[in-house]
Length: 231
Image 1 (cartoon, rainbow, N blue to C red):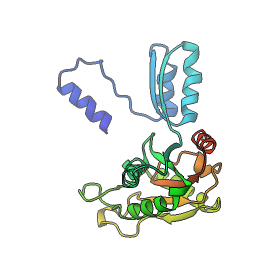
Image 2 (cartoon, rainbow, N blue to C red):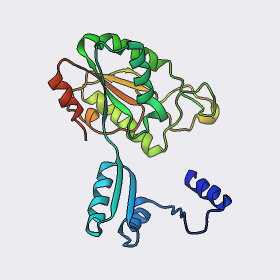
Image 3 (cartoon, helix red, strand yellow):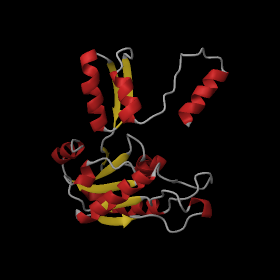
């Protein structure tokens, strides 16, 4: 709808016909047709790594220009000498903005061992204060996920975290108290998980939802290893 409205505004502003074209459709049909068409010389794509790799394979024989903004498992690194209030506030923002549906969302937070327990306590307390509800209400901090399929994916990863030995410090499911018009929506509580192995799936695979893992680190070599542990 936003793309359609953008085109409408451009038309109203007097942009000549044919300069901007909006093609609606799913990637396997519309997207693939665009990528394969020899007359389209530049492709910009935002999405998952597997799809990005497929686009690169298809476009490379035609030497098309590519701009790929792909997902990942972005880490926040917090050291013991950091301003504690600031890093809690900014980690909260980077982790849960837009319900965690952001390509650069800080979905893994690594904290220096000496500051870890205090950070966990403050971060979990701040997360619990986030208000989940009607996105049209000014007091709401977090709205719904984009689709039922995404809701199921996020809940799957939360259960996987339990199976992998993680502890749910807060959240972990769908909220039980929502305004009447939101009760059929795809809402997930802001979720904080601790005690997961660094190399487990939840710590390596992009969830794209309001789910954050907290992990302590003790030395420089470990930080480098953690930062590279992406999908």
